[in-house]
Length: 386
Image (cartoon, rainbow, N blue to C red; front, side, top):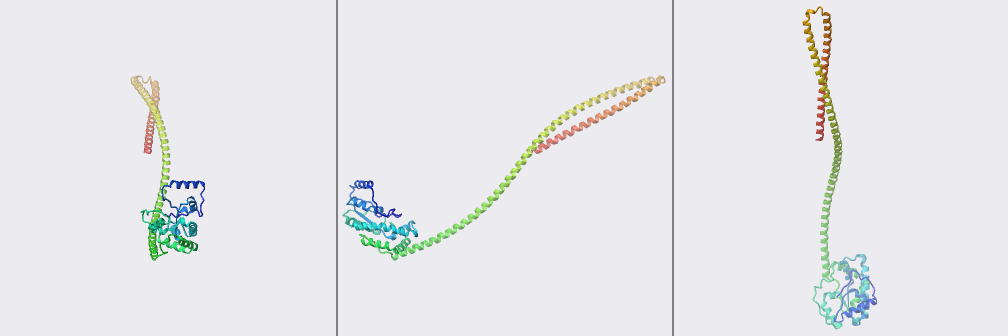
């Protein structure tokens, strides 16, 4: 039945809806005209009490009020207020309940002023009072346990009670509400049981705080260990990164060297091919020269043999003509001189033949050296390629 806005009522003065809202309100009443006894509960209706009163003279109002400590306690419980918000909360509570009390005093025959704590504790008695006051036939509705409805922790309730007791105006207004109420508060202020409950809650909070502190310390220790591990990993990552950078630099250098060696290899291959071509050309040239020299040597040898045969013939002729030596002395001397000249020519030709043979041997040695150099270049290129 009581729906106090715990987040602030939003307005602090009665509202006067316009024509459109009045028409909607009339439609609401017409729509429920066959419902018999009906109604609704909304704490915000407190700012529209005069509007609803003037709309239908049959309208009756149940005005449920609460204590100042309830307003502060619910705000503390729901963590909607701090130390600087207490005055604002109490000012809102006073504005709300002062308007409610004024409306009740002006319309006591149409209102029932009740303390919300009584509604929570004994709803059956409230229904009986309501039926007797307004000639209704309402029956209590079975619902969940109302004991925890709007319940405030004992510590928050104790703090709220202590704060509200120091606020004279709020306390005075609450006393006026209690004096005028049709159903007042169900019990006294603070009992020893409430104080013991607050102390028990305080002890439990201290134990919880100690546990949370221990948990926080353990979390800090774990965080420190994790941070140390992270720092170690960061150092290792930095070292690995540096090693990777060095490896990359080495790889780049090796790549450059490989590129250079590849260029050198290609250059050497071109040089080797050129040397091979030149060697082949030189081999062919030397072969041709060697064949020419051999041909010349054979020709000289044939000429020498021919000269030798002629010499033998001349010797035979000389032997045959020994009887005519005297007559042919002059001819013999000429022939001897001619033989001497021929012999000198033979010696020269023999020397020439020997020189040609030596030259051919030298050319052959050069061919062998060039061939060996070509083979060494090919082997070097193969080793470089490997």
